[in-house]
Image: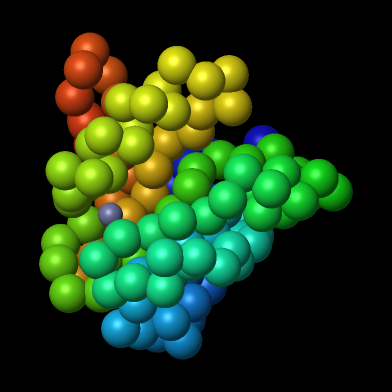
Length: 125
Ligand SMILES: [Zn+2]
């Protein structure tokens, strides 16, 4: 079983490459516990938000290892949750399929969980 730190070390260059390919739009995808990622299509095609349909997510999860985080990039801002991110996290936190949110921003990669009504950064050690 890989730790979160092991997985993040493995996926950081993959996410960086995805973010660069998608720049200046936000890139979105899924991090798996085996240290791989699956790129999703940002259906918002936006520089400021991400949309990935439930169908798209379901198809990505179908034949894969267990998801560890969802990720998206912040092409021009820090890796902290925006107000839209916080709203989405609050909505998703009650779902059985909830996983933490990884944000790849201009200050690198940070992982956030929804806890007691707020986004809390996970310590990755
Ligand atoms: Zn965001």
